[in-house]
Image (cartoon, rainbow, N blue to C red; front, side):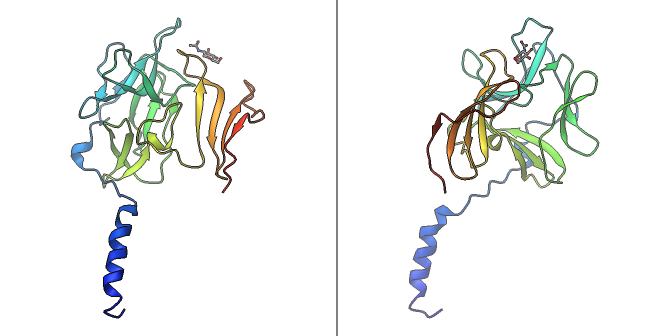
Amino acid sequence: MTTSTLPHFCCLLLLLLPLLPTVSSYTEEDCNIRVDKPLVARQNSNPITSRLEEFAFGFHPLESEKENQFLLAVWFYKTKDPTIVWSANGNKPAPENSELRLSSNNEFVLYDDEGKELWKPPRKGSKSICATIRDNGNLVILDEQYKSIWESFKEPTDTILPGQILSTNTRLRSRESETNYSKGRFQLSFQIDGNFVLYSLSMPSEALQKAYFATGTRN
Ligand SMILES: *[C@@H]1O[C@H](CO)[C@@H](O)[C@H](O)[C@H]1NC(C)=O
């Protein structure tokens, strides 16, 4: 590089700097969710809250006529009616005494009261050490270097929060009803081809029906 192009190069670098992906790193202090002792589904148990108590994470009781059932969920903590924004097990409500704990190979796993697996986040080989619930509502699982290995923001259920980015190959799915978090009849897909499509589904087969809205933004 000649000295005359150097100033231009530096300007370009400064202009591009904000566009570089921000690497969010966490520290041990961020670990507000540790499950060395399991987190147990019980009525009136205290949830874990984000630093400024904007969001809570834990077992949220479901309004149902059946026996006590719980969702492992993230919800708005300060609102009068706690609104759930993400849940792990909408299709498989957890009975009382279900547990979230670290499995023998260091994965976060939700087990029911008989030890059957109800949910676990996909992960890529690393050991989970703890998790953190953030004030933007993101639930992040961290590895031994306190790096993110899984985030609820990348696997939304039926809600997108401010600051959350819906990437291609991601979908939102409506729920069965206001109080039933089983998968419902509508799906909003940001497809790999770049098209953003609202489908209805046949239930219970979940076969996609004809799209009735699409942005047509392929590529
Ligand atoms: C929720 O809806 C699903 C699908 O219709 C149904 O199988 C399930 O029993 C319902 N759950 C409750 C608690 O009513």
